[in-house]
Image 1 (cartoon, rainbow, N blue to C red):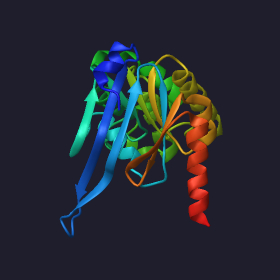
Image 2: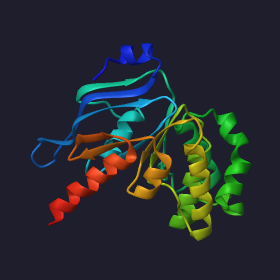
Image 3: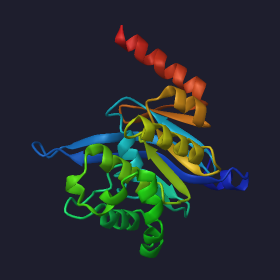
Image 4: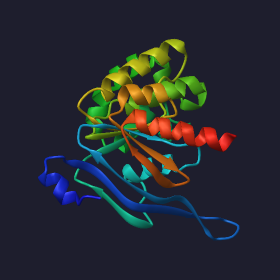
Length: 241
């Protein structure tokens, strides 16, 4: 791989870089490490949308947690070149006894926003989530769809340099599905730096500049969406035979 400094000199600025990253967890019964990520290397360039594909258990969500700054690698190198990062997730760790409004403020703070800024955005959160007066009811009274709408609406208020998206397009009922998909596509098509994890190949082709394929915790292939997706499908088609 070209050195990070060399890419900066060439004007191809890097936002995030992972080099031979490995992340392990201890198994409770054996106390032996389980390597969720074994050997992953790729770079996220400023202003691009990078897609990440892989089957369930490949290590994609663990990599997002790493890029969000929630965990550190056990091996290898991860560099954030001074950018703010937010993970767009529907599960912001809601506290069931608190109201939607209180959870919105807490969630915004966890996403790196100032309290006064998230408070100023509460009307937008209420309008977009379509919760109305339910915003002042405890989260424990919400349906799963209501919680998802609130989570999406809170997370979308953050305006980081880098946005990490983990399979959250189109949540809730059909109408909210359409609205949330449209606004997420609008954000991804902007000049923001995006890392987009998805199983939806049509969205990957539509939205992503490059794709990284993760297989069994390792980087399998990197490149333009059509090339990587074709190799991915051919690989799993052969294995299914």
